[in-house]
Image (cartoon, rainbow, N blue to C red; front, side, top):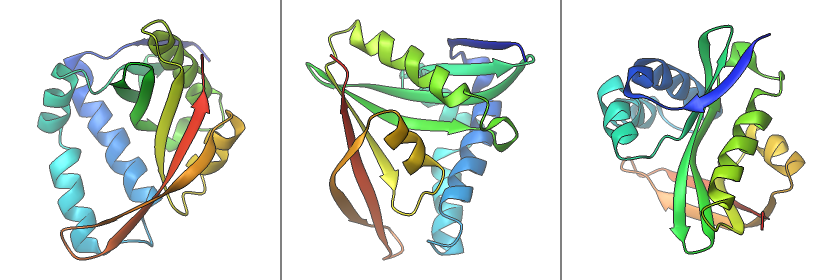
Length: 165
């Protein structure tokens, strides 16, 4: 399989929206109400919103496998030596092919060169795909963040951290 990691462009917005929408819905399938899931997808994962966020620099890299965008990672510096992953999904058809690992390596190196020494990510509690991946990459759970959604549900995110300096 021919794999390329490259910077995101606005032309990727539609495909990124599709990957993120599907990935997020898979993650929270049995956790949240249909109302909350619909509202979240309509807010974050439309091509227009993704394009806006690409222009703001919230999406960083995509992986292309066989000429098709197969995964995306995005984030930024949240402190002088702290980097955070904001979004990270791989299309289900391309999982277990080291695409996530290669995206994370490229992303991490970019932010390490900007001075990052710590890297953080939030992982939905119960995420059976994301949590083992992050743990295999050296992330450890530092705590749990609870937030109440607009529909009154409680979202529990595991705050994961690793040293990268």
